[in-house]
Length: 130
Image (cartoon, rainbow, N blue to C red):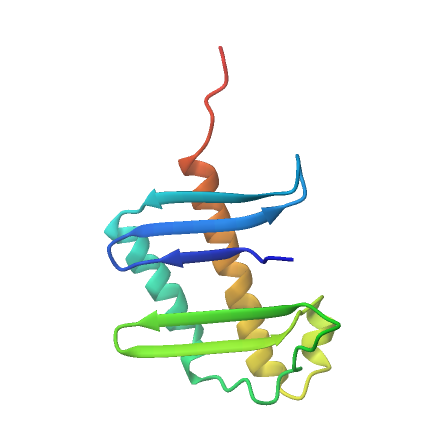
């Protein structure tokens, strides 16, 4: 299974890919150019989340039996990467050894996915026939 992936460069180039089981099991790939305001807003969301101050060493480790969640962020000279076993719900977060850090990761990844899905959906919206 190939996960959803996206990359947003400082120039505003958004690359999105997602594996779909709908209509012949194919990879969906999209590219779009975003305004500097959207890039800056994304940067603000990441910076205000506090994710750069989080340590993932106490998070559930992914193994061969379960799916994994990863987040890699490059802002300026800062480069951080996180990995953990897939989070099914907030119950998984609460029962972890680091619920505060994992909750931060969980909400940031949800926010970023929602933002990217919205941007891709808006950019590639098909106009209905009148």
